[in-house]
Image (cartoon, rainbow, N blue to C red; front, side):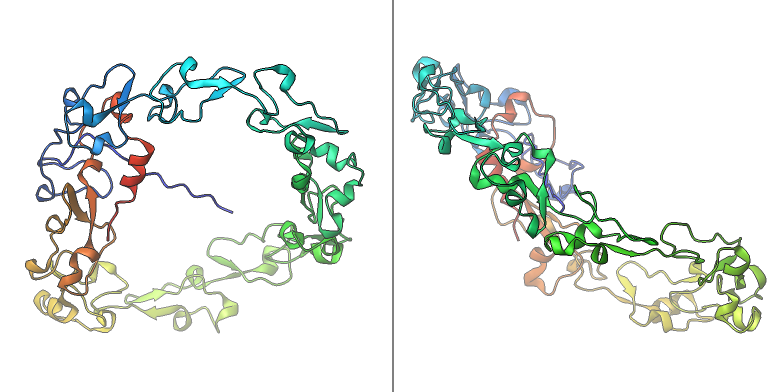
Length: 449
């Protein structure tokens, strides 16, 4: 199983850039796709001194960097007990207390105003006598008991995996891990505390190898390369020698299970089959035995067992020459002029003794309806004209090549980027606070077409 992580870069210093665009992915690279310096916003202006300064016990509102204003009322908000843009502005309640129910809307910043005593929790109540003590054999409090409400073993307690699997719940370890269904105890989770409903998490699949009781293969046999996968989820019946092991391949020129292939000499090839020596396993090839005349190409590591004789007739082939492309000597391939491309049958088109002008005519054809480099310049797509939203710039897609018709030009060749995403200068530390998670999510969703 692979884990994938997407990283989205937001740099807020420039609304749009003059003359030179920043060197980051998908940002415009031509002057006509760029506009003016970012100014007049709550935060993240090109000149940091233009950012609105919030007062004491205040911070930028969510999305302030996307708000076109220079007033404190539009750009700033009072800190609340919790849910502030900057986590450091949230109130941290002391042990035995919790945030009030309306903490997200209460404009206060002290524990006196924001916190109340905890009661009815498994642990960390204001009164120590209210904390629950587990009563069942082998039960211990959950590590996160301070966040759980209740006063029973079921609500507050569980057992370590080692307690569950050692039968302290009245059952045998084999029953807990369902060995009959291809599972066994996972010793790496011995100290994990789990409720009864999750005790099966203490177990892991039973494999041919790497298990408490791995399979032992018979003489001249070895575990399959995919033995761990073969037995997973197939039940204990599958974890046996017949399913987990395979015959050892040995004494072969190549493809042995435990030893390397026989190493042949320069310009020789390993012909396979039974054998353990160079004399038996290796043979000469065209490359080492035949010198081809001018105009022909050696067929390389073609061995004697693959042809009648190692001679010119069998080892040399005519050079591929005088074609538009695909020639043996690639330097003789035709390079099409700007605004044109190779024709579909270029590899079979003979251009022997043709002039450069004739080669262009026979090998190349006019490019049309490409995003760029068309023969007719007016067919090239100017992405700077494609933006259909205020404060957006349209830029060329990195992998775009062609479009079907004029109506699809922009969608096929370009993509829109919020001007606020275009980086032009380094932002100050306080500007980062203006990007709340809500603002980032909103910006991340705006990748149109």
